[in-house]
Amino acid sequence: MPGNALTIPEILTRIGFFLPSWVANPRPNHNGNCGYVPYLDRPRTLLNCMLVSKQWYQVMTPILWYTCLAPRIRAVPAATFERFHHHVRILELKDSNTFFPWSAFQCRQLLDLTITVRSNLDFCKELVRVNPDLKSLWWNGMIGWTKAPLDPELFSGLKRLESLTLIQWDGSGELLAHTLRVVAKTLTNLDLRFITGVKIRDITWTDKGVSPEDIVDSSGRGDSRAGNGCHEQKAKLLKFSLCLPLLRDLSLSLSKGGRLESLVSCCPGLESLVLSAHDRADLDRVAQGIRSSCPKLRSLRVQSYMTPTRILPLLRSCPSTPGLQVLSLYLSHLEADVASVILIHASTLTNLNLTISLSYGPFLPPIVRLLEGCQQLETLSLEVHEGCGIDLLAAFGSRPWGCRRLKTLCLNLAFKLGDTWPPGEGTRRETSSEALEEASRDDEALYDISSARPAMGWLLASGRRDDRLGHTDKLRMLFKMIERFELKDLRFVKWNYRTYMRARPLQS
Image 1 (cartoon, rainbow, N blue to C red):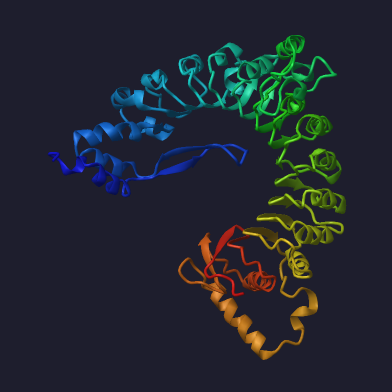
Image 2 (cartoon, one colour; image 1 turned 180 degrees about the horizontal axis):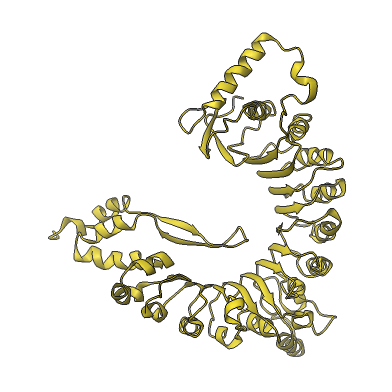
């Protein structure tokens, strides 16, 4: 029998249920699928557990120091960090008024590294160089301060790098292309923002008759069935061209200083594309790259406001087979042609996010068409900045929705002063006294809604309740609409930046 009962595995297992859990720390990244690092939500609890025995101390010390974000580095004494820095696997260095301890640059077993510093650039480069097992690197070069160009040789030792984010770097003289080429064999996620000095010829194909798919098969490896002559041709192309065969997620900020549009053509296995483009970005080149080289694209997010004329070629280039699953657009206004192209992907689209700046023109019928046609939607987000919210609510209720599988509905609508429901003179329509009493009771309940006090079958999950005069009637009509259309799978409603959660299942 062990001398200490706390060393018995069964007891350790039970106690493990009370230990702090890992939570996700969001990292600035405009790709929704990535950018999170794990850290402990209650490290003080783990510190107390470490005092139980020497064995617990030895086991839990690496867990405590696994993730070391910038606030902890600045908080702990330099001597303490020097003692435990060899346990760190996820490190974050950010600019502050305090200097980082020298030992922060001595970590040699990192898996995830974030760098956002103006000074000590040489030390940061050495830190990257001595960590060949890095799987994720997020590096803001702060070109406005450092004037530093990319160094391809610095990345040549990163043989396991899967995720790379580069922000504010000088990629002129084919430095960006050379940097990407040395990590191309392992890279699956790439995020480039504000890269200057890149020219189109730096990353375009040297042989116009060969596409990326001719060089790599669907698995990202060369075709083993090809002859020696074919292998020699492919080796030559790989030497003088840029191909990212394993890349699945690509985020590009198409700024004025760099021409990154052609990079899309270098990703034959691309599944997710995020774009932030200035007014002069060559979106036709992006569309051409999607059409010719990205048959597996399933997710498209455009995070800059565009007119329908600019966005249509991009949407039409997306493959209809297998079809888009995620689509997020920022539009100056919505037209029928845009809705028609979106409906091409109606059989596969599960997540649709539309942010519309203006509401001029007949934009209500296209929205109704999307609600009717996109029957596989699970998440729908609609934000309209111009004050036409009351007309949108009326349009929503005019026809039954086809998206019966909807689980999350996000509506951020602007209302004009004095808007009431129903719109126009409908507020004076003849209504039975019973209906008026029910509406009055619902409005009072919505006025007092909270996380513990439901109203109309819903709870306030986050945000303060909307107690502004005249706004509860619109929320009441939305909940009535949800009940009338029998959206039984709907669990969350985000209404003007407040989140409501269903308190009870919808009655059949």
